[in-house]
Length: 223
Image (cartoon, rainbow, N blue to C red; front, side):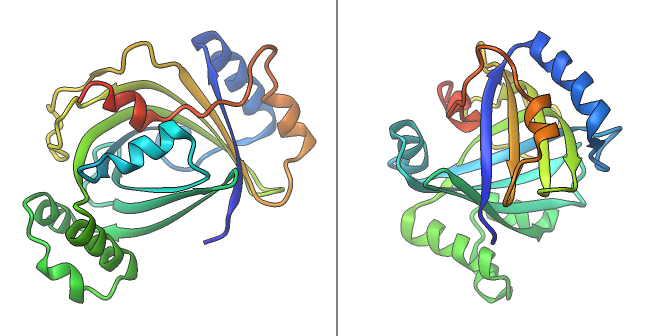
């Protein structure tokens, strides 16, 4: 897992339209989704002490969280992800799960995980058995994504952030989700060794500063 640099900014709906026009002129739309736009559903996990939530709110330098994620309601492509933040750098490990495996996890049937041969799944099992990690809430949102080859840059505009309250009914498309209060749109910029000037210029907005906004934290306010 290679650590990456990350900028995150809270933006308005008008900012999002401006950034979309700029980025469309200099970067390529992500090949996923429809013209770089897709719907994301994530199910976040935390322990009985809400460690992932509290460490985020307290700004702990090194922290991690686990989530299960799918795109556009497609149950044929589901990822288990472990996201790590350390001293301003971010990293992510992921592995594919089948819909049947996810359902077994949600039902508390964990025995199969030990012998599945996937280290991240086995680590997840340890965190569930020893640390009490359990599903906490669904987070839904829309993402517009752009990529730029130099610097391995990925720019995303996330909006329409919705919370499942305390729902963990991951596979139910009719599962109630509601807007996460007045959650803003979020600009995220990730890159490897350097951020090209053309992208740096495209994402600049007056009066916007780096933010520590967390979709998970914003949605956990409600359950």
